[in-house]
Amino acid sequence: MSITLKGVIERKTIGTGAWALVADDGKTYEIYQASPKEMLKNGLKVEVKGDVRDDVMSFAMIGPILEVKSFEAIDS
Image 1 (cartoon, rainbow, N blue to C red):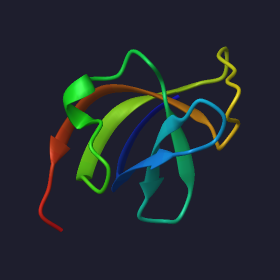
Image 2: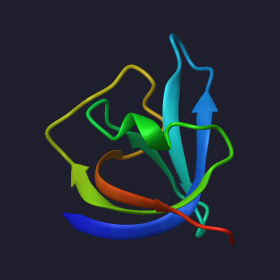
Image 3: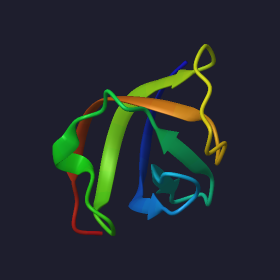
């Protein structure tokens, strides 16, 4: 399922660690490993376009897996 979201990038310290997007609506998505490395900055406010992956699992289990196709840093 393809989606567009705005939110903040957070580093979660669960297990070996995981990157997450906490969307403006409060929902947390785990960022899939193949996402652009440039966006993996704790506290970065972004708008992302990507796909929710139902065929991927993780150890962190913090929310749906989000494979980011593109992103843009935003001011607010």
